[in-house]
Length: 105
Image (tube, helix red, strand yellow):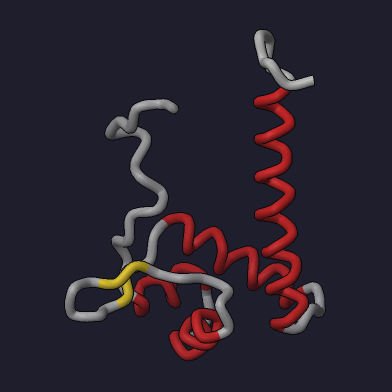
């Protein structure tokens, strides 16, 4: 795994408040809270319970917006996100098994 540098920040580190995230992705704070309640994203929390959103969370929120714009409901969005994560995992596993020197067939 590559070592993180200043040019390569941790995409999963929560740094944004919900108000900033809402402005960045162009949706309301209540929508973001709803997506969290539906399990579509899980932001980090401070010790006091304040949500802190990461770059990865922003990407997820943008993807949710795209899927909603395409006509999916939240259940459909949840399924697509789940399948995209699984597809990515399977792709990485396949890539790893096809590397030279791999003991897998």
